[in-house]
Length: 95
Image (tube, rainbow, N blue to C red; front, side, top):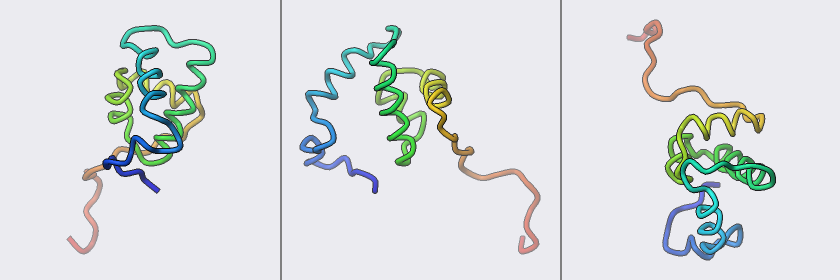
């Protein structure tokens, strides 16, 4: 179930916009994330990635780099999805 970014999104019981602002405030680009904050961020990223969000989307949302988000997901034990889009493998018999 993907959440829509509709008008009522701020009323989500999962997290209020105030909480999101607080989390974003503690995750300023380049600042170190350690301890409980790191565990919370890793769990949040894992939940969103498992829900279908891309690493690039998560990086943009958190103000962090692609590499940082990738590393956090890997450290959390997430099975990363393969790349999307067209592949350059052998053509099928129907082509």
